[in-house]
Image: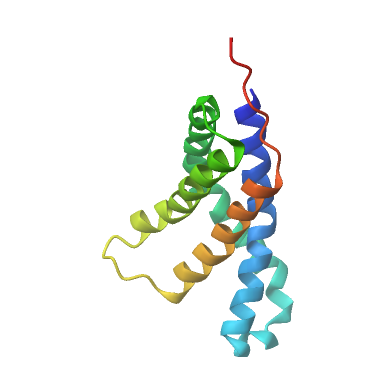
Length: 134
C-alpha cells in the first residue's frame, strides 16, 4: 500500500505539472508560439490527455518497482537513487514505442525533459515510507 501511495503522488504530480512545464519549454524553444495565446488551455489539455494515456503503463511499472526496491535492505538514499534511474527509464519508455525508427523529434525531447525532471524531483521530494521487516 505504501508503494501505491508513493507512486500515485509521483505520477499525479508529474501528470498535473508536466503539460505546463512542456508548454513553457516549448515557448522557450519556439518563440513564434507566443502569438497563439488563445489555444493555451486546449494545447495543455491535449498534452495532459496524451500524457495520461501513455503514462498509465509506466505508473504500474513504477508502483511495482517502488514495492520491490522498498523491500531491499539498503539505505533510503540508495533506494531513491535506484528509483531515479527507474523513473528516467520509465519516462523514456513511451517514446521508444512512439518513435520506433529511433529518430526522436524536438517534441519527444521536450516531453522527456519536462516529465523526466518532474519525476526525478518528485522521487526525491516525497517521503518513501520504509517497509517494516518481520
